[in-house]
Image (cartoon, rainbow, N blue to C red):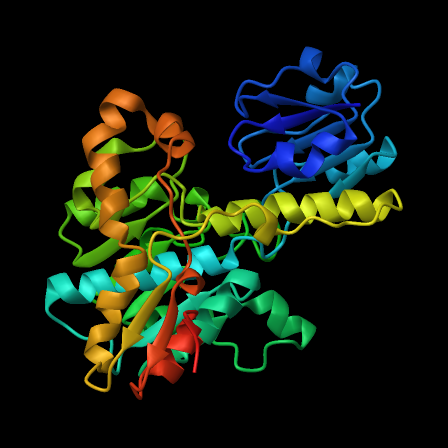
Length: 373
């Protein structure tokens, strides 16, 4: 059996080698010829799985994407060809939520402000938005949720309309899928008029899809003096991003918000489990079989640890300013895709086990740290 796997997917050999030969490919350069005699295709969001790509896929029986979004997959085509398909919803929800939290604490440090009392608007309440909201419940903030689809379905009672949320929020963080047409279109959801409507000093974070914000409009409002703190992990036209925007962004990164070791490996595991399920195979492998121990695994938190110390603990595990520095120093020489491919190791809050008698342990557990009593 021939198994084609994106070169940036971790642990594919560990999970899939028992089923056949694993062959790696560059996600942006995969050709139809490479799919000849391939039985399994494991991909990420940079690969467009369409009729052109599958023109010579004579044996393909399973396609998996280790991502939440599926807009790069022609799923009706796969159904027509009787090719099984699976995505990995929620695999990187924890990672993206922790990216947002790291950025918020970093901005508060640099702006000499506090998160206490702030209103945070979450636009898109899928796996990531829900995870972020649950973590933010540990902090003294007000959370507004906007998801018209879930509201119409009756699964989000506390829905706030987007323009109302934008008017009220001190912080706006975007976690919607890319939808290009229809009533719930999200391409350029944040357009010129909505950017102008944001309050001075608003923090605007995009860790969803680059096209959700009109990047040219964002550049224009920033050049005309808009007072926004921007955190951008995703960009229109990746990897050829609008570099003129960089000087106006507080923290910039190369579409890596979800790229913890756990998040990426969780995606691979979910595809392995789905393939096993479809083929009547007992799934016996888990992340614990393969992930290395974290560099710092245990820490004692004393009674003198306060809410003000939480940011120090968050940045001990992950500080977004590292990734901003990597992009600014190396984008011109290495390029967007190379930086993404060679993204340094990052772990999740849960890899740190906390002990002690601080009253903040409950909040730290809510944020995602492991607490041992």
